[in-house]
View 1 (cartoon, rainbow, N blue to C red):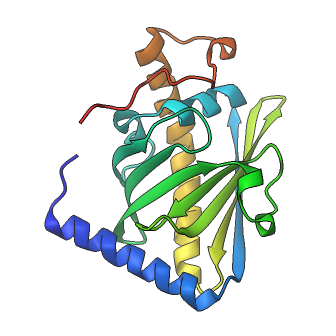
View 2: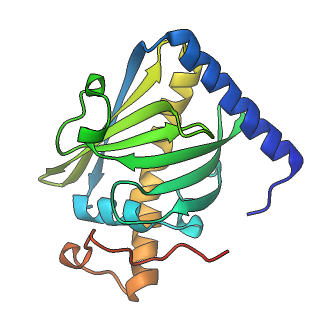
Length: 206
């Protein structure tokens, strides 16, 4: 992934805006719910992919995905990656940490089986959260998420994230995840082999 000065400036400006909305909200938040159905895709496939995904497959989600960097690639809570993508007409560098429901504020209302993503600023403070549950259905997986944004975040920005989320999910489930499984194992494998207690795709060395 190659970045120029303009890219870094856009990402920095994006973070400055989100910090301002957070500070203006004084701890108050609003929720943007969204969900989608993955027919024929088991929850284990999605969870394994999120534990192991790499830059090549990340770009398959959506044309606005620019690149991916792993800051700390581990299985489960504590993993941190930086997602470079165009959001609302501006390049963002989202620093995303995987947290447990027990480790985040109770005000998020994170269910015990939820996956919590904390989007962090460069100092490690939370800008906003995404709380997600993966529910097995008769035909596959229901992914149900809630963006928990600072109250002062403009509705246009919230709507842009919701729309982007809806657009990127099919690429993740039907292109990126199968691609990475085949790349890792040489062929598609059953969900019983997609364990979450270890990293199957190590982060690239710098």
